[in-house]
Image (tube, rainbow over all chains, first blue to last red; front, side):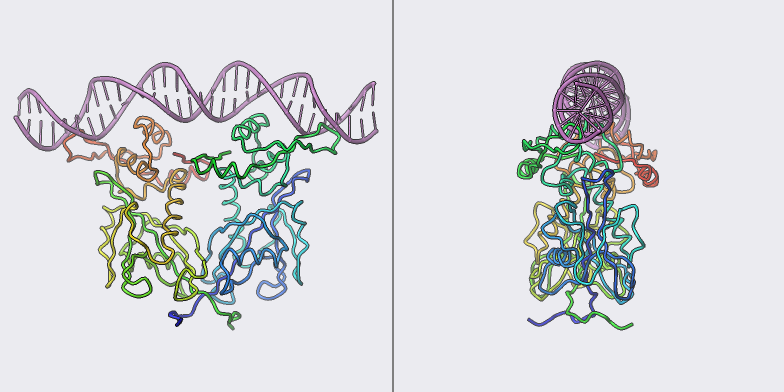
Length: 233
Length: 233
DNA sequence: TATGTTAGTGTAAAATCAACACAAACAAAA
DNA sequence: TTTTGTTTGTGTTGATTTTACACTAACATA
């Protein structure tokens, strides 16, 4: 196979905005996993986990690999966000960034750890440090996407454990969307979709009434979706 | 500046799904501009207009350039769609495709023409020929995006001329969404947003009652949008 | 056994949506 | 000038959906 294109090429990186959520917190908030850069440029600054795309891996695979290598996270929800291509976004040269969004529950997937020599840390969305490159823009875009999408696709469940209470579910949405819902109306609407399975289990341990545990019925959602069903919050 | 990354790099192309719409047709439909390939691979097949990203242009600029060079179209609505990165999507080697969607009205922007040696042609969405590369996938993704987005963002107006009638507006939405609307309810809802300006002009010429001409109030939409207003069809 | 806290539940008023028909206006033809 | 054919433009009513709102049940701990 003769390489047809000998022009200079931009390098291509993938960068991941990993949203973490902990339903166990008193006042839960969205968090983002960042990595402290040990090398120039932006040495000492925080950046999104990411790296260059290899020739023998798809973009999705590259994102999954970076997620694992840099954040120690596997098998979570991940989707492509946007490709950033400003000419001078990387001082080392022309580098495109294909960005991804991942959603992880902080109970299931351990609170960071951070692999290799890199220091990884979770930051509250409203307490982000200054970021390297154009990563602030990427994060902003990611939040907008999350806020938009969570309302008409049931991706929010990815932020919760497999079994969760109604209150935990509602808190998650309130946290993301920055608004409150009426408890009864919220339950009524969720119930009406028939996408929650009562597991029979109860969330005990706190000195108050125990709460029923539910599970999201992903299979049922997929069949409904094909029939034109619209999830909407 | 020393180039830090010497690894082999994927090539990066931009490809444009250009949706065309002609409100003057009896039975309007969505169309897509395709270009017949004169060279291998996929010689003789139809493909999306596109080309490689240059080192000194942003992705958006590359898309705009291809739109102009290959389709003779300028100054239209365009937005990034998705980046396709399957390893073998191009038989010549590793090529990523950053895809874009453009919306053009076929009265304002002449019906193709086609520049250079390339043959450009508009195809009805439901009569597409076999496409080169993974362009069928790209087109499918583009349609889904258009159908999804048109319902909660007023981008449909980009497919119409500056001044249009209520019926033309309704037909456009019916064409895209593949459904009908009740005339009175449609007008009521549109009216309620206050985004249409009565230009005072009338669409005459046909042997029936003349129709009022309206203009979309983009400025007003932007201010409303900032206040949290949601367009929704 | 008492206390503090969260879980779980129904109803009524308001707002929105969906269905539906006819007169007014125009160009062309008679 | 009148008639004809076709599209524009407009309100109301019933059905559905959304919103607002308060109290008892259940649990762990003291």
